[in-house]
Length: 307
Ligand SMILES: C[S@@+](CC[C@H](N)C(=O)[O-])C[C@H]1O[C@@H](n2cnc3c(N)ncnc32)[C@H](O)[C@@H]1O
Image (spheres, rainbow, N blue to C red):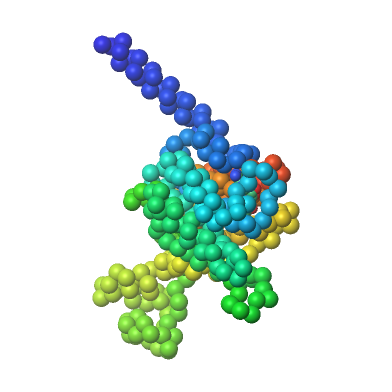
């Protein structure tokens, strides 16, 4: 009996060690390979949050035969991406999440609705959709079109693996909006008791007459809860031939969804912005890209900006 117990605990220890070495292999690394293959080798329940922007439908040629995004039909593109994120679901911890940044596409003047097609496909595969954030780009490229408004936004979908998930709302609160004479929030202004008074001055904070929603809206000392429109200018990074993530966008996602010391994955890491920001915020990272050139670029970028 005693021998059996010993053997069992030995096997347990062995499995634990194997898991640890596998995790080491993928912690704070840029891995060069097709995510469709790499995902099969990743440990389960490993990642706290994924922050990524996959290639958009027929937008750009990244110069690698294994790249996604060059499919002929929207349906094929959706199937390919959904296939990757289906395999990534068990790689994320049960409390983990995914921030998916996607832009749309016009074909013959018709909007294809690609971000929502992908989002709904992921929902069908078991990802829980929690939020659709509009990333407004104040410096978006002007366009010559006169037959419709010029697009200056993309989507950031926030998904979770399960119903119980890590989300630190306080980490990304935004400044309160000052009450003005024209403010419709009359209750708030009345509570302040002074014309032009602002909640930032802390007046009436903690007033028990204010129900939770109002208090949170007007007086939370760290600001109001993050809204779903994020106005963030596009970043330039000369060495990359494509638009890289603005660091502020990635910061929001990581601060809210990855606990300190947790791990952030970008399965389409390009120039490595997600990895860089994760490290700056004292989180671990894993970046994957099929292009050897971009993997080199990401590693160089990480090396040249030591924490
Ligand atoms: C939009 S870019 C990502 C840019 C990145 N967010 C940044 O800040 O630099 C998409 C990246 O996905 C990579 N990619 C395309 N197909 C892939 C695949 N099958 N496996 C891994 N990476 C892939 C491309 O090489 C490209 O670098």
